[in-house]
Image 1 (cartoon, rainbow over the protein chains, first blue to last red):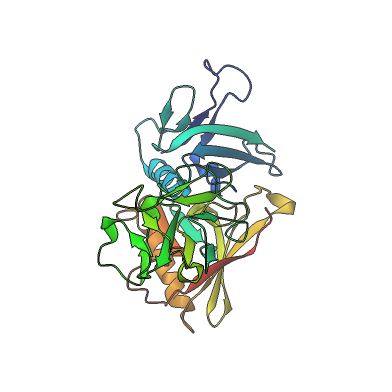
Image 2 (tube, chains in turn brown, purple; image 1 turned 45 degrees about the horizontal axis):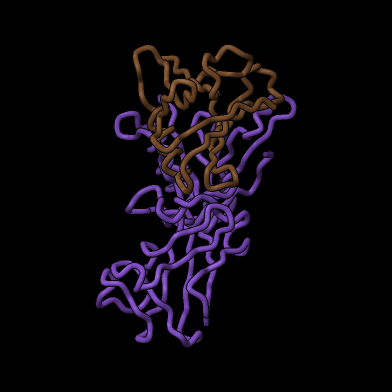
Length: 109
Length: 221
C-alpha cells in the first residue's frame, strides 16, 4: 500500500503555493523536538527529489508534548487506511492526528 | 515489511538545583536546558517536576501528609509563559498542593528535573526504512547508521549515526533484538523506544543486551 501524509497550514482554502503538502510516507526520515517546548520537526527526503535538499514540517503543539506528538504521529503513520491518505496536520480543516497539535509550518530548503 | 519508527532519547534530563533557597519562586536558567522551557502548561503537561527535600520547618499541603525524603510538589507549581519563573503556591494559598518554605534559607533545598524532551537533539525518531547499516563500534558499543535528516543523497550522501552502549560483547544480541522489532509486522506498531536516556527506557523490559545509554555520534544536520 502506498501511504501518503497530508499537511496544510491555516490558509482556507489551501490554494496558494505551499498552503498544503501531500508527501509519500516512504520519504519520512526522522522526527524530533525542534528547540522549544512547543515544536516538533519532521524531516523528509526532498519532495522535489533533488537529493540535495530537505522538506521539513514543523508541528506546533501544547508545551511539553513533543513525545506524545511523536507517538501520535508514529501511530498515524502505522495505520493502514484503505485509500492510504493519512492526515497528520490539516490546520485549515482543523483535523490533526494528535490532540496536542495546533498548527504546522512547511519549510522547503 | 512495514516501516517501524525507532526512538532514541539522546540527552539526559536537565536539572537545576536550588539549595539553601530563600524564595518561594524558582528561576530556571539555561543551566537547566538551553533554551529555557516556555508555555504556561509546561509543568502541568508533565514537562518537568519540582521536588523539595523534606524539612520539619516547611508547611505542606494535605496531599503531602506523612511524606518525607524528596517530595514532588509540582502540583502546587505554576510557570511563567516565557521567563521560566516557577512560582510555588504557599500552603495558605493552596491547602492541598501548596508548600511554604522555611524562614531559614538553609532548610530549603529544591530541584527541578526535566521529564520530557524539547531541545533540538534531545531525541529523534528514525524510520527503519532508512537504517542503512549497523556496525560494531567497540566491545560495548554498536553504531546504527541512518540516512541523514538533511535528505542529501547521491554523491553528497549524509549519514546520521546513533551509537548505543550495551553490555560487553553483547553487540550481536542487541542487533538481533533490534531486527526482531524491525521485522515484526504483527506486534510492533507506532513508536518504538530503542533507548531513552532521559526516561531510562530500553528496547525490552528484559534488556538482555544490557542497553545502558545512547548518543548521536555523527550527524550532518
